[in-house]
Length: 263
Image 1: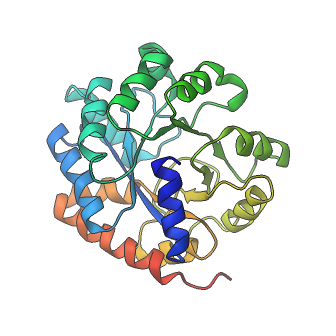
Image 2: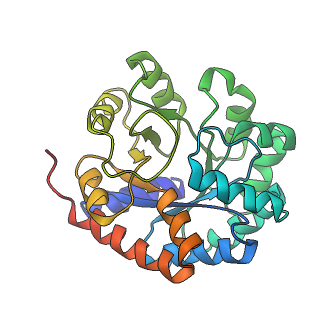
């Protein structure tokens, strides 16, 4: 049983969703990005997505795009990602979140080996589909890592089934079409997408894109196995620093435990 399997089993026993937080390595500096990740855990985040900076983050919204640009201009590289994973994984399960190009250039087998050596549990590759992920799936399997692919409201049941059979750890359900970012409301089709995904797989289904506060976290936690928060943490670190990240994590953690009844 992987660390992610253990996490979701523990959350099920506690009758709540898992809380997963994202920050990119190197924003605003390497030291502060890692401090922010540790602050998320201190505030109640159950697992951390360590972001891999990339020059063309086309699926990310403006908040993360700016943060990644700052990280790259500050010298953040893939090697720093493994350093961050090594530190953060001592406190909580860690998956990396990154586009396929940096992994491919680094070498899938080498990336998987170094990720496992650093204590990572898996990787989310948002722009990679299972049919084109053979080298990564093979490399991840060789290192006992969990490959995580995405489903979206536009995904057909066939596509969801392929993802459900290929993923390990959990399925990432994008709550709405479009780029990442905080929103006033979570996508209305998210609950339907979770139900469609559960019909195709027994894996936990985690919802991302749009959650920014405790009430939204409670709303999503009422029907999903995990709540993923990214842009809100990046904005908190950018605007107010590490303490604000910890405070936001506490609010979100309380939200997933409160679990507002699903409509």
